[in-house]
Length: 89
Image 1 (tube, rainbow, N blue to C red):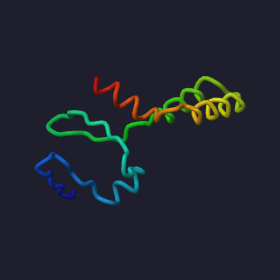
Image 2 (cartoon, rainbow, N blue to C red):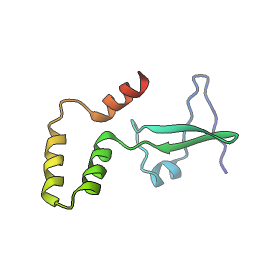
Image 3 (tube, helix red, strand yellow):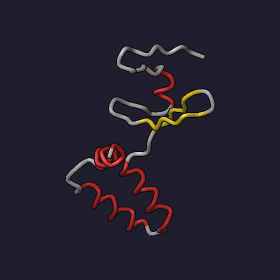
Image 4 (cartoon, rainbow, N blue to C red):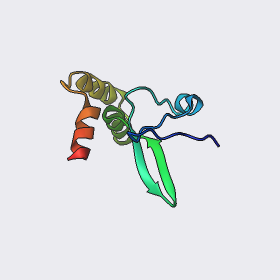
């Protein structure tokens, strides 16, 4: 177990090995949940990842998955930013 210091602004730095293992990079979002006597942090799925998973789950047509990727590439805003704003509201 590693100790993590909380700054005056409530920020923490996650150990490099955990960030690498969980593919957490600058700008990534984490979901924070109160869990027993502590906090559970886990990577939040990005909006585009969620849509891709939905497409994979509900279609076996690879062409449909490629069409969804094409549509996502044309979205004028970052979907993850829109999801974050919606959650904040």
